[in-house]
Length: 75
Image 1 (cartoon, rainbow, N blue to C red):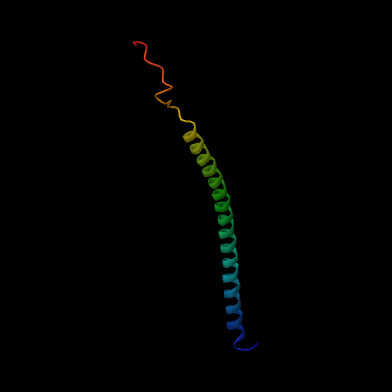
Image 2: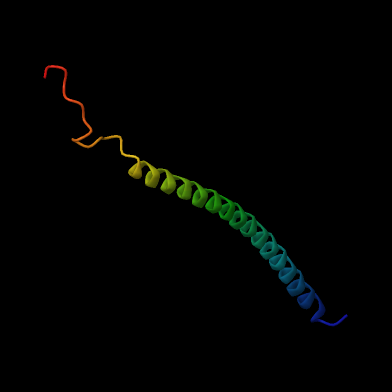
């Protein structure tokens, strides 16, 4: 056993711990990204449905034109 072996072993253990931490962090970030992507797709679909609803409500006006309006009862 040389004098450098304990130092090398310590450095290797430190690198292994860092790699393990990075792997865990990457997995956590990947899960968060997947959840956000699913949420984004849901929100896009909701926005599309809302835009269609607004568009259809604009074409189906609840107000009738003056020509189609019946006169008030006191006339």
